[in-house]
Length: 315
Image 1: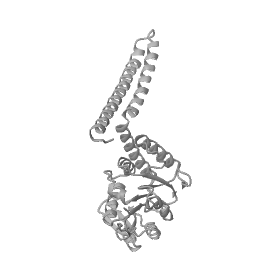
Image 2: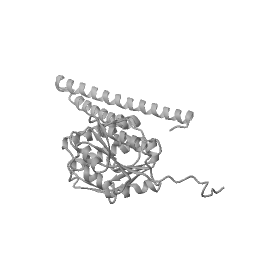
Image 3: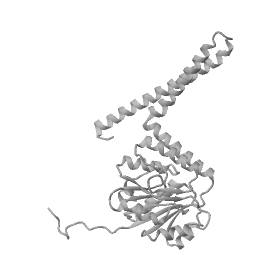
Image 4: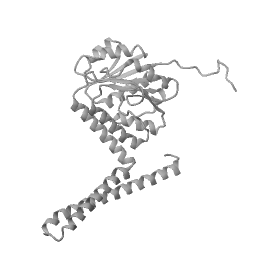
């Protein structure tokens, strides 16, 4: 039966929020808040323990500021941001950096698939047609590619730019997404959670600037190492045979090669082959142990998945 106009459920008005974690960004935060307000209904800044005037400047420019007493990390700031966006009944949330790396003019482009219902989660990507980074450092590009490859092996999502902080979320995603990490590894955990909760993800081309202050190279490298470690741990849980079995095969082959080389010298002095021989044995045993561990964990994971599907219909 077709409902009349008066019987149809009312269409709730759109209320779009832009949010940004903020830590000592007094040089750029005013411009970012002002330009973002041209495209959204409200801007929320999460001041993650700044020691400068970032919070005061953001408020003066029209942002709603929530403060952490200490610097807890990017993930912690995003947790608070999600909570506040839900409290405001936001129909969409756009997350961007407070240092000016992301172009606020791209906000409508990022929101389009969210507002049309095409996706629940949009990522501003540097690595699809139309996207890019102005003068992206080579070490950063390599690091992002390695982390993205590890993440995609684990999740099978095929995301090109897993490390982009320029993201948009529907109200459905705001309600469903939950995460534990408080550091930069949250960028991957969020993707894992979205996949598990069957939220649709799309990448939108965007350009990210690298001519803005972004801290030391050491900080970027340490963040990258933390995220890569999280990605490898996640991959080892989901595909242990890949993570443990392949290195195990490599060690076993190395041990075998060393053993054969030592055996060829058996006719020479005995002392000259004891050391290489023992090394070959323990390297081979280590390889076999890794392969066996990977096989056992993979079998246990397959059995658990079969049990969940059979008993609860879960995968």
